[in-house]
Length: 268
Image (cartoon, rainbow, N blue to C red; front, top):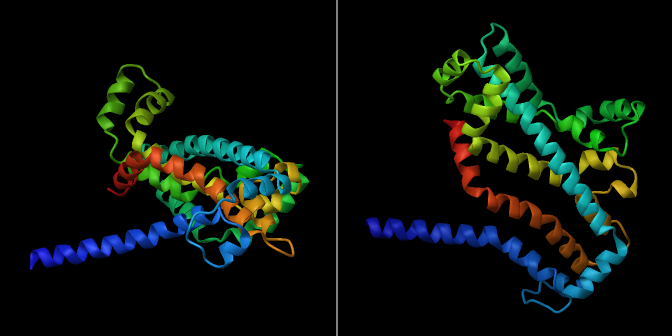
């Protein structure tokens, strides 16, 4: 009976794995075929990868879009981790009667859809002259309630005795945070890095609103442009999706172990 139960579990996991991997497999195959073969649902690798790449490079600014996405995502990730971890650390370590109320108000912001604040943000950024700038891209996402909550939960496992001992030894509060808290919470930072980088890399709506210049185009905007014409070259389109997907896959697999540890630790 136990062996039969285990067999069903393995079968379920195999089916779930195939279903999860198949879209990536089909995307890779489609990037090597011409548009007509993609529409026919061909699942055999073709010989049109170079042709699709040449067509994509000729019609869209792939290199500059990739560099823009890297620049925006990396800058946003670094600054967001520092700000959100400082906020989460402060909410947990320092005691104040109103901090739980402030935290509740911050968490309420998670219930407000971005579309509701997009137009006021655009008008404000336009008046401030921040269109087509890195600051305009990253500013609305620098501090997110989810990351603050995540770092606050992680800070609960940070030993308070170490903080008191460091204070007695003369280490100031900033030194405690950068020299003790950050190295101790490496797995949480890795998990937050993966989440923030993927969100920044895949962000489409706000860059589409704030980045009106072609020189500021990001990869998601480039992919959207591939479907904007009268006819769509699906081979080039799937190649663009593949190029857009590779950086997030690399980041996730490099930090996979730390990501799992950080998510588990933040929940506990």
